[in-house]
Amino acid sequence: MKNRFIYKALFTVLMILNIHDVYAGYQLSEVPEYEPSNPIILSIVLWLSNSLIVFAAFGAAFKKYWIVNFKFWCSVVLIDVFASGFSVYFEFLAGGYAEDEMIGVSLVTFVVLCVYLLAPLRYCQDIRGLCLAREK
Image 1 (cartoon, rainbow, N blue to C red):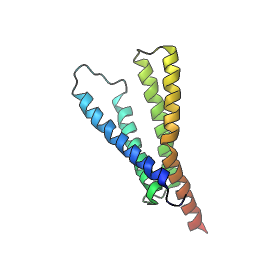
Image 2: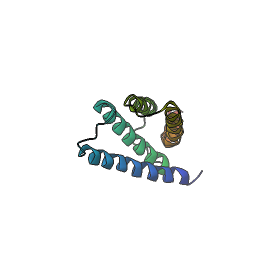
Image 3: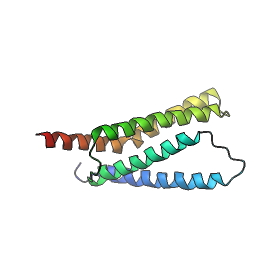
Image 4: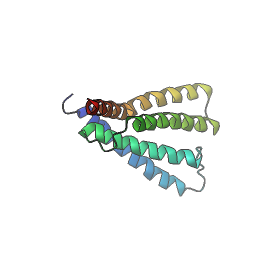
């Protein structure tokens, strides 16, 4: 894939979704009846990991490498996976879901997360190639 069109499109979608999440978070914080189901620390971790994933998607799309540390980006991907899993868990703890809805939401979350992590995994692969090339 010479021009990385898929990663450029994925970067655009991820950036729009990240901006929407921040905007929706500010809008919902003004609603007095709304209580978030996630603890605040989990919301902060999700926001940071999602922002870093958008950053990695930019790097994968345009071949820009600023943070060239393979372990760092692998840990960002793992943190995002665990934080997303805990977010779904706390959503279920809040109640209001039937058992079949929980299974459906979990499966959809897993599929979306797999697509969401394509760009940072590509970025990890590119960085690993850069690190291996520097060692030679």
